[in-house]
Length: 306
Image 1 (tube, rainbow, N blue to C red):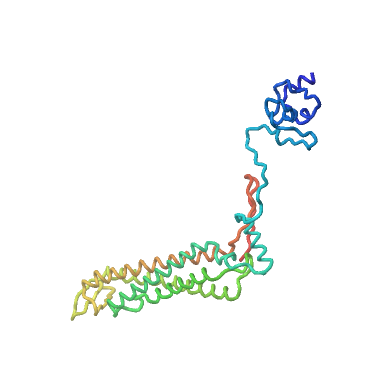
Image 2: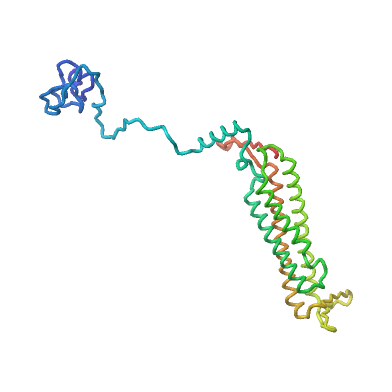
């Protein structure tokens, strides 16, 4: 029974090394049968001599349809850098120099890309407000100071420039560490200018809207080459002289300029308010939490005040 079970399986190394080669008559011969290979009259490999004194190997008995690569891989030379290898290189540089490269330092704000976009838009809108103010002053220099919003456009332009400098040139020393003295002073200056710009923009919107509403309630008449607008209400008499403009220009061009000034200042005020909200929400910017596995295990949020 033992021999019959042996005939039913492929010949192994030990079967090939057995004296007499009892498995030659069966069809279960492996490709590298050493006894068959060693026989000079073998119909399979008649020209291959056999040296029984050499150490036997099972490499030639490998009978499989899967290609085998037994060559040693070349591990020397350059390799493709991976995330772990780059991190290891940075750790080596940090351990030698003791300083973190600037590009790896955390930014001032958590949503720094959005804040940069808002600061850039503040700069553009501030330039637009200054342009509209210059146009109003050239068109009608006799208007009051509050109707020519230079005082809102310049702070808005300065706020955008300071915000770009703060976000592009300043970094934190390390997550969780307080800001350095210079960075904190520059940030405080930028936020102060932003608050002033926001208040000035909303005040300019209010003054322009009041002027527009008063023009809607007035009737303009030309007297001695001067356009004078008066209210129809007898209980409350108000008049506005426009010596540099005619009555059609007051009703058309000046109204359009005031609407443009109010719109641009309102947009600038919204941008400044959004920018200040990003600074306020970045008090707890770096959040560390557990991984939520189920409904019962709620994540525990731990924040570090920056």
